[in-house]
Image (tube, rainbow, N blue to C red):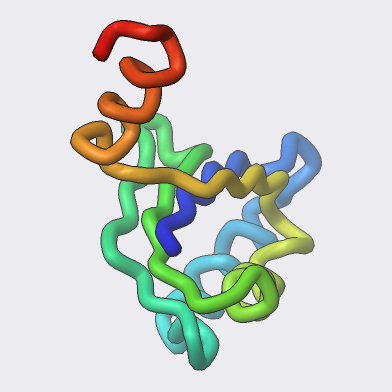
Amino acid sequence: MLFASMGTLRANCTEEGEREVLRRFSTWAPAAGAELKALYVTADGRSNIGIFEATSAAALLESLLPFAPFFDVEVKPIMDASESTPLYRRARGLD
């Protein structure tokens, strides 16, 4: 299953905290059962968007926990628009 994680650096994160994020990320790998498909960082460096494929919510949580002290994170299941569009069309009686 695909998930999008949207993380925003906490307002109280210090420069030392930012250095710690970079240190952790340099050795980080997703947990078993999770694969990072893409990672984007906003131009201001304060937010990120990760696309994960995960076999369980637990695998995704374990992958994100090392950064929990520094980021407010929102996670949502996602799907390709080519899959969702027919479902929306059918639900709206358009097919």
